[in-house]
Length: 124
Image (tube, rainbow, N blue to C red; front, side, top):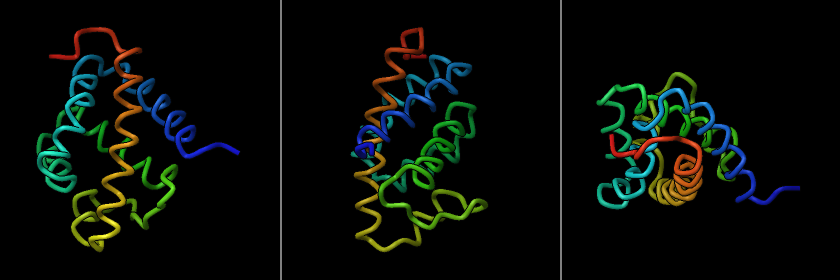
């Protein structure tokens, strides 16, 4: 039996290993992501990432969505074809807050692994 933190850590490691092909741009984005969420909110940050459409943006969105569907202790009912922003805009406020806390905890692991595994400054 693994703790929630162990599950987050394992999944984040898998995500960062997948992101090695994107490199420093993913690392930079992952490092900025928690502050963006704290300043603007999760929904607004996700909408921003969706609008950017870069490889690193799409990959981070994919990782967050995969985390919520498969590894998150909350396991919200997120449809495959639905955008993350659409899903977040329809959930109740208490679930939205819980998802935000959960995604921030996951993002801390992403940032730690990106810092240690992805070469480059991460400021690209």
